[in-house]
Length: 117
Length: 115
Image 1 (cartoon, chains in turn green, cyan):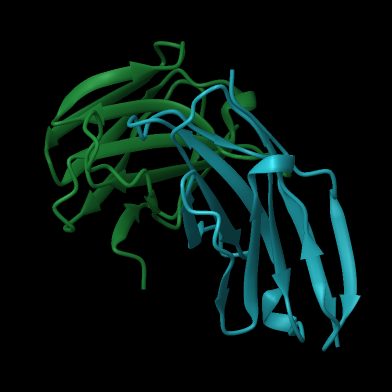
Image 2: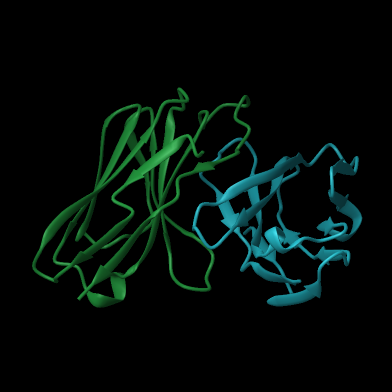
């Protein structure tokens, strides 16, 4: 079983809806990530949080709003999405970033498969 | 800029055959990490191996083995005696220096193992 838990596993929403994706890890990791993966493509980085602070935003549209309430939780708030935003959204965590002890290894959840109608 | 290339888009083999998945990377850093991940149909990316740039020793784990060659910037992955459960998309990835957020995936190779 994965140690990174994502909910919901599947989400269908209309373009005017507001929804959230949730991610939780209890490995004591201090870096958490959101990736977006379209069919037959590799994951693409969206956001990185390090010590609960946003450290990277890969020019993601504002209709995606990340939140890191504490070191174990990561949310992705969705609002006014477009059909092309339909994808698998993967959460990941790693030990820590910004120091030489980081292994760089990411642990992924199973993802939330989002469909925007 | 860092880049990972997996030239094989799809591979099909018959069960018990050996198969090698190729990975070629580009980086200007002298310190970096290379990874292989497996993504079964369920969607989760499963970590298989990490190798740092100073350790060129090849590694074997059961039916899996990895060949890291800095001279050719390659980090190839071999599955011996493949099984149907090995069917998945395999991603090679690169992380530069000390910063895990610079984590770049290759395009992936879809492996189908036929019974």
